[in-house]
Image (cartoon, rainbow, N blue to C red):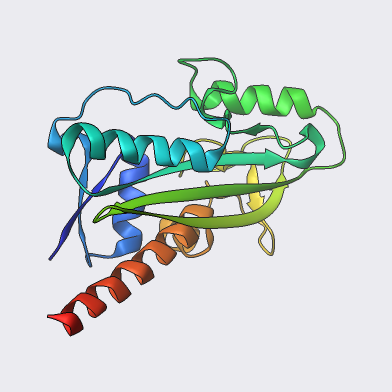
Length: 200
């Protein structure tokens, strides 16, 4: 089974990605290659941050790898928190802090439409690739459920009545932004591997 490095220290993300790839690849995290520092995320776009993290590991550790960045984009807030989703309530804030600020900022606004967007940046044999996953939904007025992480307790995807936090992980992964982006990554890697085999 081929190993591939996922540039993250986030155990929740790591668990989700491992579940989505379903044993097809041996996923190694940043920690496993002794990359324990916090990699700067200074881009003003989700794509830019994903690329920044992947390039950092490639340039400093020499490994092919992939990295992701995710943002929650709320229409009534002009796309906020967006690229600042992880630090919406301030650097070092908790998931709960971010959710509280989001709900306070939205207040009683009747427009609750939003989307999660994930971009994965892959560096493989000197080339860079991007894979995007989007799920549309709405922000409810108070959190529900105990699963997931981040804004999951207040996000209900279109076509469902449960928040991501209320869903079984298998269901969430099959429809989520990260699930869709990782599925595109897996499809690409499978095609890449098949092409390599045919050329050998």
